[in-house]
Image 1 (cartoon, rainbow, N blue to C red):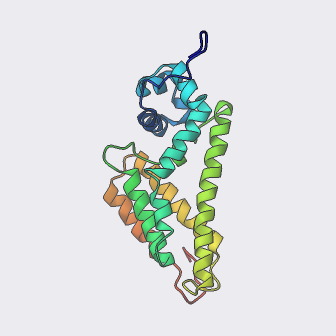
Image 2 (image 1 turned 180 degrees about the vertical axis):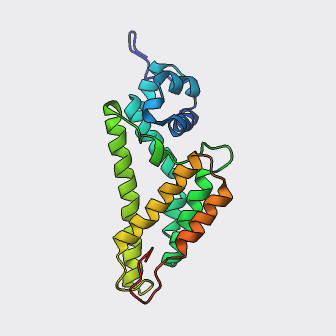
Image 3 (image 1 turned 120 degrees about the vertical axis):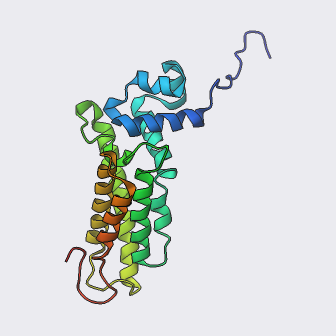
Amino acid sequence: METGQKPIGRPRGFDADKALELAMRVFWEQGYEGASLTDLTHAMGITRTSMYAAFGNKEDLFRKALDRYTEGPASYGARALQEPTALQVATAFLDGSVRATTHPGWPTGCLGVQASLAAGEPGGHARDALIAWRNEHTAFLRDRFQKAVDEGDLSPGTDPGLLARYLMTVANGIAVQAASGTARDELQQVADMALQSWPPATGPEQPGG
């Protein structure tokens, strides 16, 4: 190395993957605005300087934590879309929601639902990110149910968008109830009841009709 040449960086003195996991849990438990930088850096075991260097500002960190949540605790959603029938998709989606929001060792509820429900102006970007996140997952369900209509698995009169919104609304309600302390068994009964109104492959029925 030439004299005066700066070293090409130094390895981080912490596990970035583990730190992100811990930050995700803080946002999950406390919401975007409720999670202070002190809470986050204390849980992650790093300084603010290290946090900014590795993850960016609080908003950047939240978006990365949301991605981590999507790929981890909320990955049941992507798996559900692979089920062979629309009813099996819905069943796997709601069952996954019940398990993820009441999983032992995880915070209760859903990060995607609760993290910014009460966010004011400072949390506007996080709130918008979560709205987009929920809409994106609703769109995934809508497209899957459109495929089911096209294949004859659902009645031609079924509205895929409405069905997707219905399922997402039930899942979001399950998450809120889980955060309020409702037991897993009770939430599973709610999920099962919601599926009793699932539209058949023939006929004009819609969920809840």
